[in-house]
Length: 76
Image 1 (cartoon, one colour):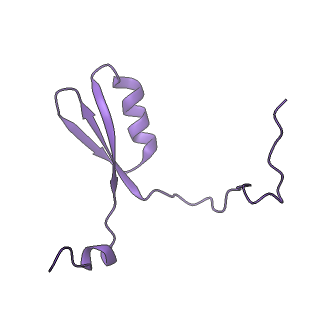
Image 2 (cartoon, helix red, strand yellow):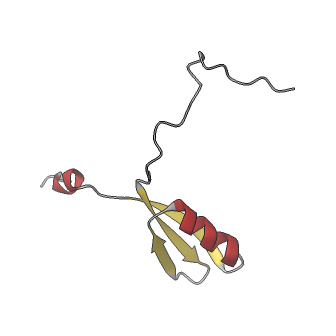
Image 3 (cartoon, helix red, strand yellow):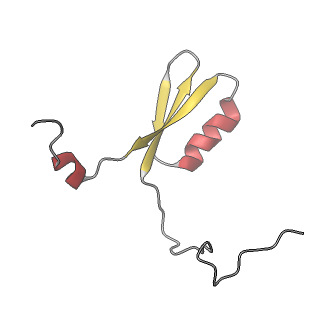
């Protein structure tokens, strides 16, 4: 039998919010290189499940926030 992690253990995790949480976009890529970008994991997983024979992979893309867009990149 597997022992569960106790609530007092620092490894214990519980849900902290019921609100939608997704900081990524997901690029679903076919074997021919065509791609579809979706804004949540559920849609990406649904596409993968239904069309996995023609798909190559899924890329996780960061969503750029306003603050991150303002950051200078390189020597600016």
